[in-house]
Image 1 (tube, rainbow, N blue to C red):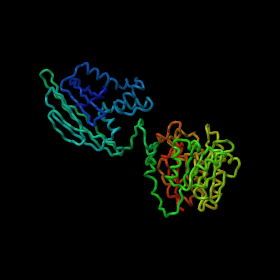
Image 2 (tube, rainbow, N blue to C red):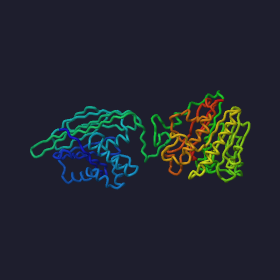
Image 3 (cartoon, rainbow, N blue to C red):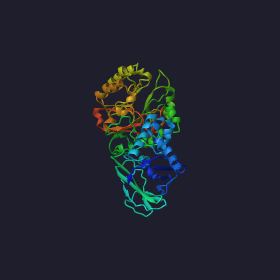
Image 4 (tube, rainbow, N blue to C red):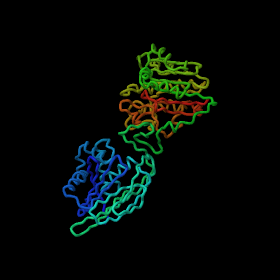
Length: 518
């Protein structure tokens, strides 16, 4: 007779999970699965002789009764986490979510429709490749224990007292899985003079389309930006990976300029960090022609010292500092190529006291390095931002565009679309993602013919340039895209590559780059 198994779990120092046949009480045959972390084999042992009632009661108490939904609701958060971890399920989140996860696992286990918690662990942590396993054996009447070892590569195996099947572990992160696993065991029990054979079948069917990369939150991620992190991802969205998404290097004989922009969040602090070599390595690695900096937080008295010690080969640098609030804001352009002209600010005194804009003119275009005012806590500067600063900057750019194309780069303090921020719903009234700021960004820049070069090149890519320090967003890639290269339509088609360098540390922003064919 084929019956289903209901699994209860008991964990000893050696790591033992026990299963009890609770649906066929007259067969009381426990099956013990020993699981050793150092081995790639999973061993089942099914003793032929019945175990003592006290051992069975203990297993039931610690296994089946603990998994009862009513009892689960009464468990503490720590007990639930311990239970989930013991069956290989991630245990992070609020209590209602963890209770639901545990109940779901138990329900799938009882119904026989989903995988058991052990199989859940194998799937979530190992993601096995296509498997179709069928193993059948006839058990002999014996008082000796029958042992089962599982192996992926064996489809049909028959043995007298031992059947072997091995399960290979796999770390594949994205595969098409259509697997059917069947474990059939027959055990024999002697009751007085009668011999009873019971046949137990465990079947697990898994059918899923292409699975996304699963991330264990407890383990550090080497390149978190390659993981799609978004509260409300849409179909077709992918995570930005500069290793695979940057365009091939432009031919050396093709005239071009490489521009870079970086909000350094305090230049002096960056240079004092252990990671400060990253600043100089960036110049060596990217060999840029122009570097635009925002939020330098320098005072005018500091500029000469910084300028002389910063980068060799970049003899042309132009700095503007805040005079209304010392050690605040500040922008700069460092160039290997000498520009035709330089301007500071918008030419409007109400906007030019915080050192937020530097403009340089080259042969083929104007380059603006800008640090747009943040609307601030409580959105106290929102009105100033959308009614004064944005329109004034837009008009200034259109005036320049009469003679040459314009490129604006820097921290524009606006995540334009929902794809540009990890948690759009939770930041509707946060500075940088209010409806007013997003509308102003669209009205004053995009609708006036300036192209978001990164979004044009990567319409469905989630790539962030800012991660707040407060919640360690960079480690989990929970960020915002606040840094841009906006280009006049007449020059946007000359862009060879618009990219982000999320691997460069030292600031809460990452550098961004633009390669422009001349």
